[in-house]
Length: 403
Image 1: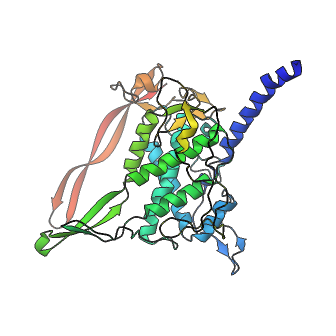
Image 2: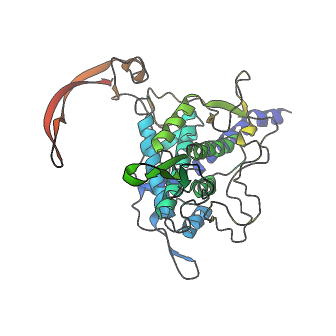
Image 3: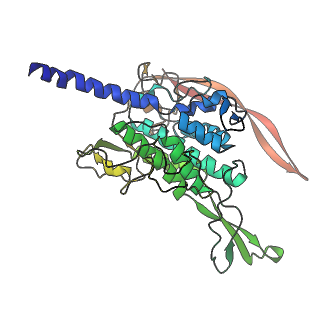
């Protein structure tokens, strides 16, 4: 009896902790492809056997490599997606204590976003959502630009139009982008625990944010610009719009626990598809061949059906809500163990009462001000035709930094 108690008290919690850390460490490796110089997708012989791999292919698992090989041109889109996600993450959190630090300049870094990923906090939730959204966005746009050989513009909108407009042009292929992102990004996840479900859910939140933001864009036609008829197509939202939406979801993220009945028949990735080739390639509309069920597909009710609110008084998370289950670490002080850099030396606004204000940014510590000289363009005038000439002005500004 005593032995059973010791196992329950010490061994099981430790095993659970190790499982969570393993899940966290095993996913997200594909992000590091953005740290390598891009040359090509992959070199193959006539039988399709890999005879050499570009260095950026090393972080990919077997299924991801197969998808890259079967969709020439896609690797460049994925690499650009990661860079776009990093840029947007840093922009959205530039005035927060956690400002999305990365190891972007460290080639082959095992974890682009650092040790924060070992904690299932809301910052980690945002990282998974923004990177998944970026792959969806970049691949969909690359299809319409002709950069990927296996997809083109989305022509499904060639159907009845309005009285003064008609479908035409080249719509961004969001169906292919969403489907590819689901297959590629979710292929990195393994397990059946709460962290696995959290990653899968937040990945899908990112994709849904891009898909739901598609908008109609039109061009006028007619004599002398009369716009008697318009040609319209579907265009992706700007990625800044995607980042702003996900930032709002970050602020309202839901803390969750796994339902008592556990995972409901659901999602994961890395499973084989029903198509005979098992190649991970998709057709032009984003749908795979075959009728088999893929483990990466969302089940009825969505991944959110597996969660219950950590606080019983809160509403359950929706399909587009970010979810997490760990408290965020203290970002005020440097902590190598959890990968936080602290706010010492961070710039702050001494007149703001918001999160960028010195009181909050410096966590109650003092801050110092110093004067800096800034050169900028000023007194710009337009000269016919067609130049803009500016003077160079020097201004003195006081910059405040946390002690």
